[in-house]
Length: 146
Image (cartoon, rainbow, N blue to C red; front, side, top):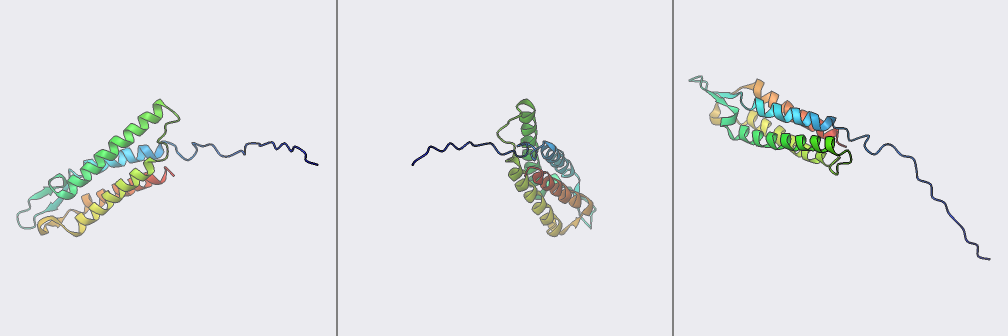
């Protein structure tokens, strides 16, 4: 009474595998990290007595932002070129974690730069808030990768 039962397996139709991983997030991360580097060359602090300006690249905050921004820019550029050259690039989704980490560092360092000014100088709010928002844009780019 045993019968051989043959089960046919039909593949389930699903969404396109690359639908959620367009290069838009990589491009946004690339541009926002370049902007973070550029804005680190603006005045972060001003001495209230002498009026002497301290540029962002002269502070530890600015140096950290420049390093993280440069690494993110290079990473996003290499991912974009790799996707351009090979469509099924193995690192299609993973950059989101890297971009998120870079965004977190840029945001936290820019907040620290606003809250704890160097040598008690007056903060240049425009430059520091723009640095904060470049970190926010890199965070948005990381969300495009998931």
